[in-house]
Amino acid sequence: MKYTFKITFTLLLVIAILSGCLYPESEKSKNQEAHEDQLVRVQQAVDDYREATNGLVPIRTKENDTPIFQKYLIDFNLLKEKGLISEIPGNAFENGGKYLYALITPDDQPRVKLIDLRVTETIRSINIRVNTYRDEHLYPPFGEVVADDIYSIDYKKIGLESTPTVESPYSKESLPIVMDTNGKLYVDYRIDLNHALHEYEHDFTEGDDIRYILAENTPFLPAYSLPYTIKNGEPVFLIK
Image: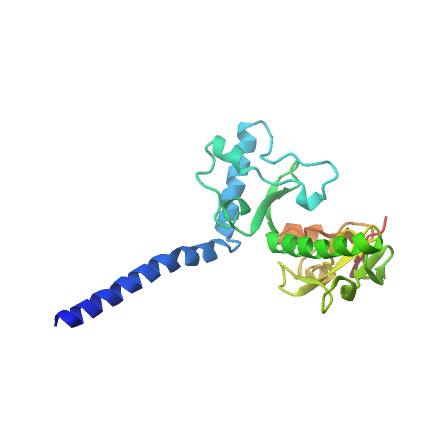
């Protein structure tokens, strides 16, 4: 009887220990998702901050030439100092999550959106390979011409087995990574833009920057993107 009790007790103890170890990871996994309620809470905090500061927005200072969809990152410290949030969202980078919180149209009805840091990490890892190649060959590893001054990456030159892609935060499809004449990398969002143009109502005409159809209608910002416009109902690079 004592032996049975000891075995049972030991098993229960092991289960308790394992449960204690696994629970935080489970919670972390749930927090990694782009929960709508977290966006709503941060949006309310941003709105309250603007009201308390005569229209200012709680953002970090960035260089003027920072790409528009990566420029207005929310400064959670400012929101905490005002007592507008008690804790940083669990899916935010500042709390170990995989998203940066940012604003669009900060001067006119600013709205809270997300930047998927998995896109950032993929761009960074490919950029390391591109820079290593350029250290030896000076020129970027240009592949085929995609559009005027836009190229695919010759993946073999940078030691990859296939064309570099990134998982779309919108559709989960594999989006190509392209480069400009200076070797700067971008995500090609034409697949997602094509879906969005057919799914959402819009009045875009040729010459408009249609990336806002993604930013306006989804939680995510098209980070690391070039401008796109619409031509014959299809998304194309906006060449200026």
